[in-house]
Length: 201
Length: 201
DNA sequence: CGCATTTGTGCGTTATAGCGCACACCGCAA
DNA sequence: TTGCGGTGTGCGCTATAACGCACAAATGCG
Image (cartoon, rainbow over all chains, first blue to last red; front, side, top):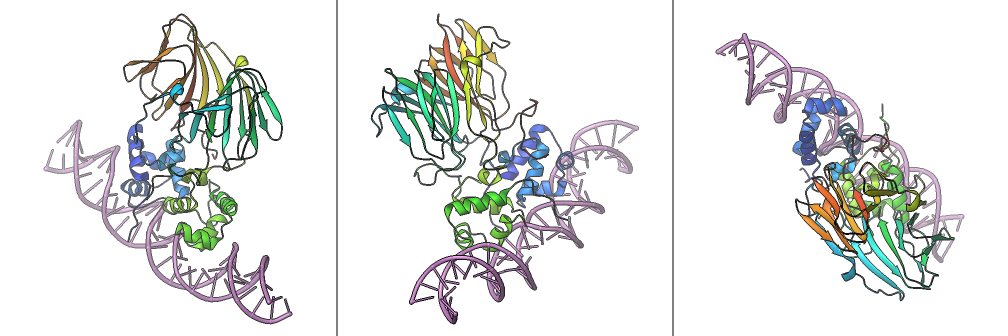
Protein backbone atom coordinates (compact mmCIF):
# COMPACT_ATOMS: atom_id res chain seq x y z
CA UNK A 1 0.00 0.00 0.00
CA UNK A 2 1.51 3.29 -0.99
CA UNK A 3 0.52 6.39 0.88
CA UNK A 4 -0.11 9.40 -1.24
CA UNK A 5 2.75 11.83 -1.01
CA UNK A 6 1.68 15.03 0.67
CA UNK A 7 4.13 17.21 -1.21
CA UNK A 8 4.60 17.57 -4.92
CA UNK A 9 8.34 17.28 -4.86
CA UNK A 10 8.36 15.26 -8.05
CA UNK A 11 6.60 17.77 -10.25
CA UNK A 12 8.71 20.57 -8.85
CA UNK A 13 11.94 18.72 -9.43
CA UNK A 14 10.97 17.92 -12.98
CA UNK A 15 9.96 21.46 -13.84
CA UNK A 16 13.08 22.95 -12.30
CA UNK A 17 15.25 20.43 -14.09
CA UNK A 18 13.58 21.29 -17.36
CA UNK A 19 13.97 25.00 -16.71
CA UNK A 20 17.67 24.41 -16.33
CA UNK A 21 17.66 22.23 -19.41
CA UNK A 22 19.32 19.38 -17.57
CA UNK A 23 19.03 15.67 -18.31
CA UNK A 24 18.68 13.05 -15.62
CA UNK A 25 22.31 12.02 -16.11
CA UNK A 26 23.48 15.58 -15.81
CA UNK A 27 21.37 16.10 -12.73
CA UNK A 28 22.66 12.88 -11.19
CA UNK A 29 26.20 14.11 -11.75
CA UNK A 30 25.49 17.51 -10.19
CA UNK A 31 23.54 16.24 -7.23
CA UNK A 32 25.27 12.98 -6.41
CA UNK A 33 21.94 11.18 -6.52
CA UNK A 34 21.51 8.29 -8.93
CA UNK A 35 19.53 9.06 -12.00
CA UNK A 36 17.24 6.11 -11.33
CA UNK A 37 16.31 7.62 -8.00
CA UNK A 38 15.80 11.04 -9.55
CA UNK A 39 13.44 9.52 -12.08
CA UNK A 40 11.47 7.72 -9.41
CA UNK A 41 11.16 10.88 -7.36
CA UNK A 42 9.97 12.82 -10.38
CA UNK A 43 7.33 10.20 -11.12
CA UNK A 44 6.27 10.14 -7.49
CA UNK A 45 7.24 6.49 -7.16
CA UNK A 46 9.31 7.18 -4.10
CA UNK A 47 9.58 9.98 -1.59
CA UNK A 48 13.19 10.95 -0.88
CA UNK A 49 14.76 11.28 2.54
CA UNK A 50 15.68 14.74 3.64
CA UNK A 51 19.31 13.82 3.10
CA UNK A 52 18.80 13.14 -0.60
CA UNK A 53 16.41 16.04 -0.88
CA UNK A 54 19.24 18.19 0.37
CA UNK A 55 21.62 16.73 -2.19
CA UNK A 56 19.12 17.40 -4.95
CA UNK A 57 18.41 20.96 -3.86
CA UNK A 58 22.08 21.75 -3.45
CA UNK A 59 22.90 20.32 -6.85
CA UNK A 60 20.16 22.39 -8.44
CA UNK A 61 21.33 25.47 -6.50
CA UNK A 62 17.91 26.08 -5.06
CA UNK A 63 16.85 26.24 -1.40
CA UNK A 64 15.42 23.01 -0.15
CA UNK A 65 12.10 24.62 0.58
CA UNK A 66 11.62 25.17 -3.13
CA UNK A 67 11.13 21.45 -3.57
CA UNK A 68 8.56 21.40 -0.80
CA UNK A 69 6.34 24.22 -1.99
CA UNK A 70 2.81 23.06 -2.67
CA UNK A 71 2.74 24.58 -6.12
CA UNK A 72 4.92 27.04 -7.96
CA UNK A 73 2.17 29.06 -9.57
CA UNK A 74 -0.37 28.74 -6.81
CA UNK A 75 -2.46 31.73 -5.93
CA UNK A 76 -2.53 35.15 -7.50
CA UNK A 77 0.36 37.37 -6.65
CA UNK A 78 -1.06 40.69 -7.69
CA UNK A 79 -2.61 42.51 -4.76
CA UNK A 80 -3.44 46.16 -4.21
CA UNK A 81 -3.90 47.53 -0.69
CA UNK A 82 -4.80 50.97 0.54
CA UNK A 83 -3.67 51.96 4.02
CA UNK A 84 -6.29 54.69 4.36
CA UNK A 85 -9.08 52.17 4.17
CA UNK A 86 -7.26 49.65 6.28
CA UNK A 87 -6.43 51.69 9.33
CA UNK A 88 -8.40 50.47 12.31
CA UNK A 89 -8.30 51.34 15.93
CA UNK A 90 -7.93 48.15 17.87
CA UNK A 91 -8.17 47.39 21.56
CA UNK A 92 -5.42 49.77 22.52
CA UNK A 93 -6.36 53.41 22.51
CA UNK A 94 -3.83 55.73 20.94
CA UNK A 95 -2.75 53.43 18.15
CA UNK A 96 -3.95 52.82 14.64
CA UNK A 97 -3.07 49.69 12.78
CA UNK A 98 -3.26 48.96 9.04
CA UNK A 99 -2.56 45.45 7.84
CA UNK A 100 -0.93 46.17 4.51
CA UNK A 101 -0.12 42.59 3.63
CA UNK A 102 -1.71 39.80 5.64
CA UNK A 103 0.19 36.69 6.48
CA UNK A 104 0.63 34.08 3.80
CA UNK A 105 2.48 30.87 4.35
CA UNK A 106 4.43 31.14 1.12
CA UNK A 107 5.92 34.48 2.17
CA UNK A 108 6.22 33.99 5.91
CA UNK A 109 5.58 37.56 7.02
CA UNK A 110 2.91 40.15 7.56
CA UNK A 111 3.31 43.88 7.10
CA UNK A 112 1.67 46.56 9.23
CA UNK A 113 1.59 50.30 9.23
CA UNK A 114 1.31 51.50 12.82
CA UNK A 115 0.40 55.00 13.92
CA UNK A 116 1.15 56.01 17.50
CA UNK A 117 -0.57 58.97 19.10
CA UNK A 118 1.41 61.24 21.44
CA UNK A 119 2.10 59.65 24.82
CA UNK A 120 1.15 56.23 23.57
CA UNK A 121 2.83 53.33 25.29
CA UNK A 122 2.22 49.62 25.04
CA UNK A 123 4.00 46.48 26.14
CA UNK A 124 3.37 43.50 23.91
CA UNK A 125 3.17 39.94 25.03
CA UNK A 126 5.81 37.69 23.49
CA UNK A 127 4.87 36.25 20.13
CA UNK A 128 5.47 32.67 19.23
CA UNK A 129 9.02 31.48 19.32
CA UNK A 130 11.16 32.49 16.39
CA UNK A 131 9.13 35.54 15.47
CA UNK A 132 11.21 38.52 14.38
CA UNK A 133 10.02 42.09 13.91
CA UNK A 134 11.51 44.64 11.53
CA UNK A 135 10.45 48.17 12.46
CA UNK A 136 11.15 51.22 10.34
CA UNK A 137 10.23 54.73 11.42
CA UNK A 138 8.45 56.61 8.67
CA UNK A 139 7.48 59.75 10.55
CA UNK A 140 8.22 61.12 14.00
CA UNK A 141 10.21 59.45 16.69
CA UNK A 142 9.43 56.28 18.63
CA UNK A 143 11.01 54.26 21.36
CA UNK A 144 11.16 50.49 21.34
CA UNK A 145 11.50 48.25 24.35
CA UNK A 146 13.89 45.52 23.34
CA UNK A 147 15.72 43.25 25.73
CA UNK A 148 14.52 45.28 28.71
CA UNK A 149 15.87 48.50 27.33
CA UNK A 150 14.13 51.40 25.62
CA UNK A 151 15.82 52.36 22.37
CA UNK A 152 15.05 55.57 20.56
CA UNK A 153 14.47 55.40 16.83
CA UNK A 154 14.44 58.55 14.75
CA UNK A 155 12.79 58.99 11.39
CA UNK A 156 14.46 56.78 8.81
CA UNK A 157 15.95 54.36 11.29
CA UNK A 158 15.13 50.68 11.37
CA UNK A 159 15.46 48.06 14.03
CA UNK A 160 15.21 44.32 13.80
CA UNK A 161 14.62 42.45 17.02
CA UNK A 162 13.39 39.12 18.34
CA UNK A 163 9.70 39.42 19.21
CA UNK A 164 9.36 36.13 21.00
CA UNK A 165 10.03 37.89 24.24
CA UNK A 166 8.68 40.95 26.00
CA UNK A 167 8.81 44.09 23.87
CA UNK A 168 7.01 47.38 23.54
CA UNK A 169 6.44 50.65 21.72
CA UNK A 170 5.96 54.18 22.94
CA UNK A 171 5.75 57.71 21.60
CA UNK A 172 6.88 60.38 24.04
CA UNK A 173 6.74 63.23 21.57
CA UNK A 174 3.90 65.65 21.00
CA UNK A 175 3.20 64.59 17.47
CA UNK A 176 2.03 61.41 15.80
CA UNK A 177 4.57 58.76 14.86
CA UNK A 178 4.22 56.26 12.04
CA UNK A 179 6.19 53.07 11.58
CA UNK A 180 6.24 50.08 9.31
CA UNK A 181 6.26 46.81 11.15
CA UNK A 182 7.26 43.69 9.29
CA UNK A 183 6.60 40.61 11.37
CA UNK A 184 8.35 37.51 10.22
CA UNK A 185 7.15 34.12 11.44
CA UNK A 186 9.29 31.10 11.64
CA UNK A 187 6.49 29.12 13.19
CA UNK A 188 2.96 29.43 12.03
CA UNK A 189 1.02 30.55 15.09
CA UNK A 190 -1.13 27.62 16.06
CA UNK A 191 -3.52 29.45 18.31
CA UNK A 192 -4.84 31.87 15.75
CA UNK A 193 -7.75 30.42 13.84
CA UNK A 194 -8.14 31.13 10.16
CA UNK A 195 -4.48 31.36 9.48
CA UNK A 196 -3.38 28.91 6.84
CA UNK A 197 -1.27 25.92 7.78
CA UNK A 198 0.59 24.01 5.16
CA UNK A 199 -2.07 23.02 2.68
CA UNK A 200 -2.44 19.44 3.99
CA UNK A 201 -5.65 17.55 4.68
CA UNK B 1 29.33 4.12 7.07
CA UNK B 2 26.91 6.81 8.06
CA UNK B 3 26.91 10.05 6.15
CA UNK B 4 26.61 13.12 8.29
CA UNK B 5 23.17 14.60 8.02
CA UNK B 6 23.24 17.99 6.38
CA UNK B 7 20.31 19.33 8.38
CA UNK B 8 19.77 19.39 12.10
CA UNK B 9 16.23 18.10 12.01
CA UNK B 10 16.75 16.07 15.15
CA UNK B 11 17.73 18.87 17.46
CA UNK B 12 14.93 21.03 16.12
CA UNK B 13 12.35 18.33 16.58
CA UNK B 14 13.47 17.70 20.12
CA UNK B 15 13.45 21.35 21.14
CA UNK B 16 10.06 21.96 19.59
CA UNK B 17 8.64 18.89 21.23
CA UNK B 18 10.00 20.03 24.57
CA UNK B 19 8.59 23.50 24.07
CA UNK B 20 5.20 21.96 23.60
CA UNK B 21 5.78 19.75 26.61
CA UNK B 22 4.97 16.63 24.62
CA UNK B 23 6.27 13.13 25.24
CA UNK B 24 7.37 10.82 22.48
CA UNK B 25 4.16 8.80 22.87
CA UNK B 26 2.06 11.89 22.68
CA UNK B 27 3.96 13.09 19.65
CA UNK B 28 3.65 9.71 17.98
CA UNK B 29 -0.08 9.86 18.53
CA UNK B 30 -0.36 13.36 17.09
CA UNK B 31 1.89 12.79 14.11
CA UNK B 32 1.16 9.21 13.18
CA UNK B 33 4.86 8.41 13.29
CA UNK B 34 6.07 5.67 15.60
CA UNK B 35 7.74 6.86 18.72
CA UNK B 36 10.77 4.72 18.01
CA UNK B 37 11.27 6.55 14.74
CA UNK B 38 10.77 9.90 16.40
CA UNK B 39 13.45 9.03 18.94
CA UNK B 40 15.87 7.93 16.24
CA UNK B 41 15.29 11.12 14.29
CA UNK B 42 15.87 13.22 17.38
CA UNK B 43 19.12 11.42 18.08
CA UNK B 44 20.19 11.78 14.49
CA UNK B 45 20.28 8.01 14.03
CA UNK B 46 18.12 8.19 10.96
CA UNK B 47 17.11 10.88 8.53
CA UNK B 48 13.38 10.85 7.81
CA UNK B 49 11.78 10.85 4.39
CA UNK B 50 9.94 13.94 3.37
CA UNK B 51 6.71 12.01 3.85
CA UNK B 52 7.38 11.37 7.52
CA UNK B 53 8.84 14.82 7.91
CA UNK B 54 5.55 16.15 6.67
CA UNK B 55 3.65 13.99 9.15
CA UNK B 56 5.84 15.23 11.97
CA UNK B 57 5.53 18.88 11.01
CA UNK B 58 1.80 18.63 10.56
CA UNK B 59 1.39 16.91 13.89
CA UNK B 60 3.41 19.60 15.61
CA UNK B 61 1.45 22.30 13.76
CA UNK B 62 4.58 23.88 12.39
CA UNK B 63 5.57 24.49 8.76
CA UNK B 64 7.82 21.80 7.42
CA UNK B 65 10.59 24.28 6.77
CA UNK B 66 10.90 24.83 10.49
CA UNK B 67 12.42 21.38 10.83
CA UNK B 68 14.91 22.14 8.10
CA UNK B 69 16.29 25.40 9.42
CA UNK B 70 20.03 25.22 10.06
CA UNK B 71 19.74 26.37 13.65
CA UNK B 72 17.08 28.05 15.70
CA UNK B 73 19.31 30.43 17.56
CA UNK B 74 21.86 30.98 14.85
CA UNK B 75 23.00 34.49 14.19
CA UNK B 76 22.08 37.60 16.08
CA UNK B 77 18.65 38.93 15.36
CA UNK B 78 19.09 42.39 16.75
CA UNK B 79 20.05 44.83 14.02
CA UNK B 80 19.82 48.61 13.83
CA UNK B 81 19.87 50.36 10.48
CA UNK B 82 19.76 54.02 9.57
CA UNK B 83 18.37 54.95 6.19
CA UNK B 84 20.11 58.31 6.15
CA UNK B 85 23.51 56.67 6.14
CA UNK B 86 22.43 53.94 3.78
CA UNK B 87 21.04 55.94 0.90
CA UNK B 88 23.24 55.59 -2.13
CA UNK B 89 22.85 56.74 -5.66
CA UNK B 90 23.34 53.76 -7.90
CA UNK B 91 23.72 53.45 -11.62
CA UNK B 92 20.42 55.07 -12.39
CA UNK B 93 20.32 58.82 -12.03
CA UNK B 94 17.26 60.20 -10.30
CA UNK B 95 16.93 57.44 -7.76
CA UNK B 96 18.29 56.84 -4.31
CA UNK B 97 18.32 53.44 -2.76
CA UNK B 98 18.77 52.44 0.88
CA UNK B 99 19.07 48.78 1.74
CA UNK B 100 17.34 48.69 5.10
CA UNK B 101 17.57 44.95 5.62
CA UNK B 102 19.82 42.91 3.38
CA UNK B 103 18.85 39.49 2.21
CA UNK B 104 19.17 36.62 4.66
CA UNK B 105 18.23 33.08 3.80
CA UNK B 106 16.33 32.52 7.02
CA UNK B 107 13.98 35.42 6.25
CA UNK B 108 13.78 35.21 2.49
CA UNK B 109 13.42 38.89 1.70
CA UNK B 110 15.28 42.16 1.45
CA UNK B 111 13.86 45.57 2.26
CA UNK B 112 14.68 48.78 0.40
CA UNK B 113 13.73 52.39 0.76
CA UNK B 114 13.62 53.94 -2.70
CA UNK B 115 13.51 57.67 -3.44
CA UNK B 116 12.46 58.75 -6.92
CA UNK B 117 13.27 62.21 -8.19
CA UNK B 118 10.69 64.05 -10.33
CA UNK B 119 10.42 62.68 -13.87
CA UNK B 120 12.30 59.56 -12.94
CA UNK B 121 11.47 56.47 -14.97
CA UNK B 122 13.08 53.06 -15.04
CA UNK B 123 12.23 49.68 -16.48
CA UNK B 124 13.68 46.77 -14.53
CA UNK B 125 14.82 43.52 -15.99
CA UNK B 126 12.93 40.48 -14.71
CA UNK B 127 14.28 39.05 -11.49
CA UNK B 128 14.71 35.37 -10.93
CA UNK B 129 11.63 33.23 -11.16
CA UNK B 130 9.33 33.37 -8.18
CA UNK B 131 10.45 36.77 -6.96
CA UNK B 132 7.63 38.94 -5.62
CA UNK B 133 7.82 42.64 -4.80
CA UNK B 134 5.70 44.45 -2.22
CA UNK B 135 5.75 48.20 -2.79
CA UNK B 136 4.27 50.74 -0.39
CA UNK B 137 4.19 54.44 -1.12
CA UNK B 138 5.39 56.49 1.83
CA UNK B 139 5.43 59.93 0.26
CA UNK B 140 4.30 61.36 -3.03
CA UNK B 141 2.81 59.44 -5.92
CA UNK B 142 4.41 56.83 -8.13
CA UNK B 143 3.41 54.71 -11.06
CA UNK B 144 4.30 51.07 -11.39
CA UNK B 145 4.56 49.12 -14.61
CA UNK B 146 3.03 45.75 -13.91
CA UNK B 147 1.86 43.29 -16.51
CA UNK B 148 2.42 45.84 -19.30
CA UNK B 149 0.24 48.41 -17.61
CA UNK B 150 1.13 51.52 -15.64
CA UNK B 151 -0.70 51.67 -12.31
CA UNK B 152 -0.83 54.78 -10.19
CA UNK B 153 -0.18 54.44 -6.48
CA UNK B 154 -0.98 57.25 -4.11
CA UNK B 155 0.52 57.81 -0.70
CA UNK B 156 -0.44 54.99 1.64
CA UNK B 157 -1.23 52.51 -1.09
CA UNK B 158 0.57 49.22 -1.51
CA UNK B 159 0.94 46.87 -4.43
CA UNK B 160 2.22 43.34 -4.54
CA UNK B 161 3.25 42.02 -7.91
CA UNK B 162 5.33 39.30 -9.53
CA UNK B 163 8.77 40.67 -10.34
CA UNK B 164 9.99 37.77 -12.42
CA UNK B 165 8.81 39.59 -15.51
CA UNK B 166 9.26 43.07 -16.93
CA UNK B 167 8.30 45.83 -14.50
CA UNK B 168 9.12 49.45 -13.84
CA UNK B 169 8.78 52.57 -11.71
CA UNK B 170 8.26 56.20 -12.56
CA UNK B 171 7.50 59.49 -10.90
CA UNK B 172 5.65 61.97 -13.08
CA UNK B 173 5.04 64.50 -10.35
CA UNK B 174 7.08 67.57 -9.51
CA UNK B 175 8.10 66.37 -6.07
CA UNK B 176 10.12 63.51 -4.70
CA UNK B 177 8.44 60.19 -4.07
CA UNK B 178 9.50 57.63 -1.50
CA UNK B 179 8.51 53.99 -1.39
CA UNK B 180 9.30 50.90 0.61
CA UNK B 181 10.17 47.93 -1.56
CA UNK B 182 10.10 44.50 0.00
CA UNK B 183 11.55 41.94 -2.36
CA UNK B 184 10.72 38.36 -1.54
CA UNK B 185 12.76 35.54 -3.06
CA UNK B 186 11.50 32.07 -3.56
CA UNK B 187 14.66 30.97 -5.27
CA UNK B 188 17.99 32.11 -4.02
CA UNK B 189 19.50 33.88 -7.01
CA UNK B 190 22.39 31.74 -8.12
CA UNK B 191 24.13 34.36 -10.19
CA UNK B 192 24.78 36.85 -7.43
CA UNK B 193 27.99 36.13 -5.60
CA UNK B 194 28.21 36.61 -1.87
CA UNK B 195 24.65 35.71 -1.23
CA UNK B 196 24.33 32.84 1.17
CA UNK B 197 23.09 29.50 -0.06
CA UNK B 198 21.80 26.91 2.35
CA UNK B 199 24.64 26.57 4.85
CA UNK B 200 26.42 23.24 4.26
CA UNK B 201 29.06 22.73 1.61
C1' DC C 1 10.12 2.28 51.10
C1' DG C 2 7.36 -0.55 47.34
C1' DC C 3 4.44 -0.08 43.38
C1' DA C 4 2.46 2.18 39.39
C1' DT C 5 2.98 5.23 35.63
C1' DT C 6 5.49 7.56 32.29
C1' DT C 7 9.74 8.79 30.49
C1' DG C 8 12.95 7.35 26.54
C1' DT C 9 15.92 3.55 24.31
C1' DG C 10 17.12 -1.13 22.20
C1' DC C 11 15.79 -5.14 19.16
C1' DG C 12 13.91 -7.98 15.35
C1' DT C 13 11.06 -7.62 11.30
C1' DT C 14 9.14 -5.49 7.30
C1' DA C 15 8.80 -1.88 3.88
C1' DT C 16 11.13 0.93 0.92
C1' DA C 17 14.79 4.38 -0.42
C1' DG C 18 18.79 4.28 -3.16
C1' DC C 19 22.24 2.12 -6.02
C1' DG C 20 24.42 0.13 -10.49
C1' DC C 21 23.31 -1.78 -14.58
C1' DA C 22 20.87 -3.20 -18.55
C1' DC C 23 17.37 -2.14 -21.69
C1' DA C 24 13.94 0.24 -24.71
C1' DC C 25 12.89 4.48 -27.11
C1' DC C 26 13.87 8.21 -29.60
C1' DG C 27 16.14 11.71 -33.40
C1' DC C 28 19.84 11.88 -36.56
C1' DA C 29 23.50 10.61 -39.82
C1' DA C 30 25.76 7.56 -42.92
C1' DT D 1 18.17 0.02 -43.43
C1' DT D 2 22.09 -0.09 -39.62
C1' DG D 3 24.38 2.06 -36.28
C1' DC D 4 25.04 5.76 -32.49
C1' DG D 5 25.05 9.31 -28.70
C1' DG D 6 21.34 10.69 -25.74
C1' DT D 7 16.87 10.43 -23.64
C1' DG D 8 14.22 8.11 -19.69
C1' DT D 9 12.48 3.53 -17.51
C1' DG D 10 12.60 -1.34 -15.48
C1' DC D 11 15.09 -4.87 -12.50
C1' DG D 12 17.71 -7.02 -8.80
C1' DC D 13 20.39 -6.05 -4.78
C1' DT D 14 21.80 -3.64 -0.57
C1' DA D 15 21.22 -0.14 2.95
C1' DT D 16 18.20 1.77 5.95
C1' DA D 17 13.74 4.07 7.25
C1' DA D 18 9.84 2.79 9.89
C1' DC D 19 7.19 -0.30 12.47
C1' DG D 20 5.56 -2.92 16.97
C1' DC D 21 7.00 -4.61 21.05
C1' DA D 22 9.63 -5.17 25.10
C1' DC D 23 12.74 -3.31 28.34
C1' DA D 24 15.05 0.10 31.65
C1' DA D 25 15.59 4.38 33.77
C1' DA D 26 13.25 8.13 35.85
C1' DT D 27 9.14 10.20 38.22
C1' DG D 28 5.26 10.20 41.42
C1' DC D 29 2.25 8.57 45.11
C1' DG D 30 0.74 5.77 48.98
